[in-house]
Image (tube, rainbow, N blue to C red; front, top):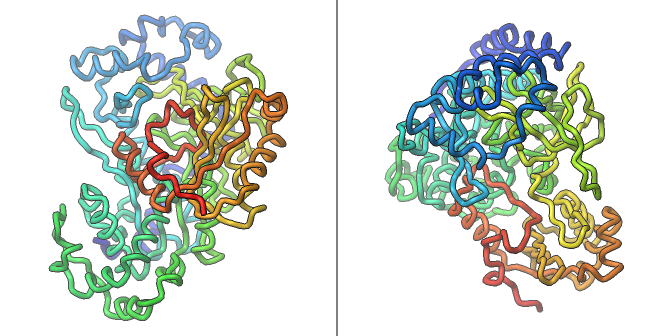
Length: 550
């Protein structure tokens, strides 16, 4: 449980980070393109004697331009054989040093992906967390005055056949936090390993409720926090009773991976008791009056949840963007938490950007950081120290401005959040914007919705978890999409696309969908809802959750 960490310890930690990590980063920002080219040269030199390096003549490459000519763009399946072969044999196929850890994530073929990390990449995660923590400490006074609640995956979830551990990136990030911050955690070791979904959330809720001085909530997906609050609201009397009874209470003992009691101050327990019988008033602000910040994803389709999240916290509680993060790399660092300005991690990864041009099938040439233009969207490729070369991230980012001489970016959507039945090229962010606009116009709220494209019927179906979808809603969304996407409008007007259908869903659908995705390999703490998909790619059976229209 949370240890006592005085403010002098936090301050001394942050001053050390300032000198050791922050000031050098500011220096690097003066010449980001030079740093990128120097980093590429370092990576190629260190990996030139691997089988992969010999195959693509790393030793003879002298510039980024030669690198692009010599090395094609890769996806994970192109590298799987080398990744798995090196882990099993120890032969230097992809990396000049043996990876010490792998990040597991779901793959496009159904087989999990195991992204290799060499030791320096593990060390970098710690440096990244130091830099991000410092930016938070500078930007939000008092952010670490109280306890912290971090909901993440597990750093180690198993071992590969060669013996190396694998786990989640969020778990590694949690481990990489400065000890002065980790020591403030309200969650005991082992709680996130609890397999039972219900009991895990009940125990996390109990630990969180006991933390009367909680000042930070952090988890990648804001839906995790909303789910936690739903559990607290629905089980509040049981949770307060459990905290009063202690370890003997069933929700604190059944199948637990830990045996520590949950300490709670008598005045905190008394305060919680005053809230009994009023579940509707239980917000993050009411439960944790000292909450200074919520750190989570605010971009992509997570952005649809942020307005609701903001209604649950005080006006002066910061909602901090966690950054463009993935299993392959920590792609951006939030250096200005007031404005949520995030820079690419140019000192650790070599980035290439390919402009996204709506309605244009022509692939543009990749460019480097210095050539990015504000307001434009780009696909991302990365080259890492751990054996990913010109790796297609299948992500779209937008350039939002500049911090010193480095462009700032925000995550827009996964590249696979694009559908194209008959040339309309519909993007996930367009669907989100259209649905949110239609919701505002219709005067009702809906957090869970997914649109599926059916290439056989040449139409789209929008599934929404809501009781009373008005008959005009389909037309409103359809009109919004036509305003945003001229090709969509043309295909609808010509009859090549059928009218949009809307289907109301029962109130349990969001939880069922999430559980389904977790069972298929997504991690609960890193769950990502893809709101636009092809019907044939979606394995969830929405027909079992349709609500009968009144």
